[in-house]
Image 1 (tube, rainbow, N blue to C red):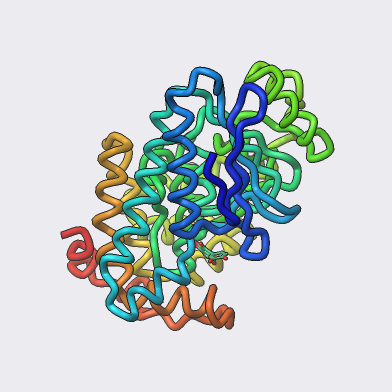
Image 2 (tube, rainbow, N blue to C red):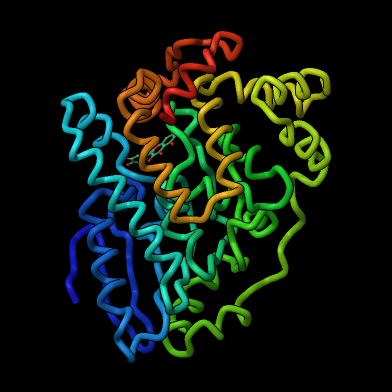
Length: 335
Ligand code: QUE
């Protein structure tokens, strides 16, 4: 089996193992890693000795913190459009390969799992979360949008939780991940290593034996408010409902939303609303088309600069207020 520094792919007993191995970058996916994962999955698809695939992240902090969005911004600034296109086209093709994979694909998420990391876990049959798991789709904070097939799976999470998670970028802990549907099993970190070994020896049957009862949903107290506010049919109406609520949770949520790119809130809301009626391949195609307009947009260049490159965390959005977002400019992003 081919083996790269940043991805270690190897056979182990009855399974194929993929280790995302760039811990200093929180295992964020670059194009070489995407290609290595794709090659491993294609090699194992028709190998009768491989009964399942297990994916893990190296180090204690992250499963995978996302895609290499810093490189994408640099390509875009240098007008290297074919490099931008290759990154997203191959990343989304990997997401679809995982979704359609004929063998159980099992992600062991024992740390940060955001954006592209959710793309290489959520589409698999099984996602095991530990108490150190932290799931989030934080793209509205960088002027982008929830991609990697999120426009397919977010509108299919219970109620309006997917819209809430997409617009606020709210972090979801390992137990809550099972409640909202990011994860299928909850297994504490102390047992993840034994689970991983058992998967190689027995296959996916080991999952149930290591799964523990999920602790209570921390957002239960706000469930009704989330459903009321985020089932609105537009971003301004979501803001109006949160303002009308007036409680501490609603004010906190408004503050979170006001820090996000207003334009990004609009195009993300539209994408997710429409995704409810599309297949996964359709969603990925629409997302790929949206990368062509968003990655050139001021909001993406400024958002990645502020949150990932310079880390000043003070992005200067333009327009800066949702009241000033031009619906025609949002519609043009999808054209
Ligand atoms: C919002 C995001 C991302 C982010 C930070 C945000 C994102 C992403 C990364 C990231 C993390 C580690 C890396 C890297 C990129 O950060 O999508 O290259 O090494 O991929 O506030 O959406």
